[in-house]
Length: 161
Image (tube, rainbow, N blue to C red; front, side, top):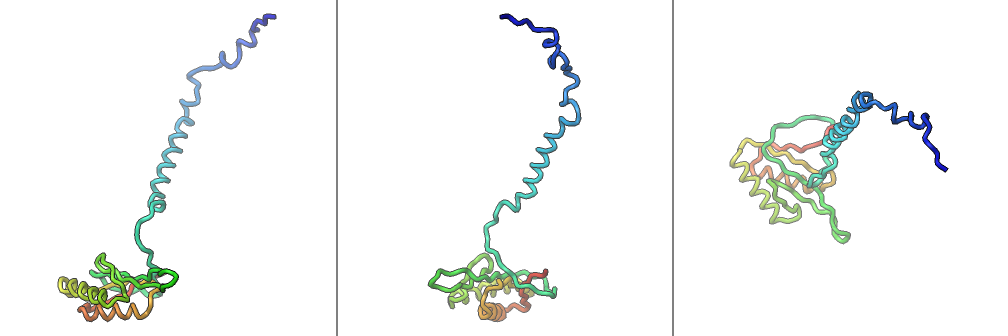
């Protein structure tokens, strides 16, 4: 049985298509490009939050007052977690060098390093960025080492909320 196409089958969608009336010639043609640009902008804006910077997080204690002075010297003190059999250890970083707070030899080296920097910049002040978990004795020890090295002004950094 041979069925011949009727005129109605021939006049379907194909015969009503006009190339000049395509959707891509209008405003809707731009929408995919705008979406792509917005996605690229969002990725670039969030890139700083996605990429982790190597370093140590220091939780500064909170303070309600804002005072300070310009600083040429900075020391970072934080408490490193120990192993289960050992307690936390306080570490001091000055000029990108690590000093163990519990070591007498390292504390002497820290004093010598601060004294060298003070000889170069005699009017400089020291800012100590001390983690909120460090022991009070460690902070007082670093303060006295800095004072013995000749630092005239010492500031302890805090976080103001």
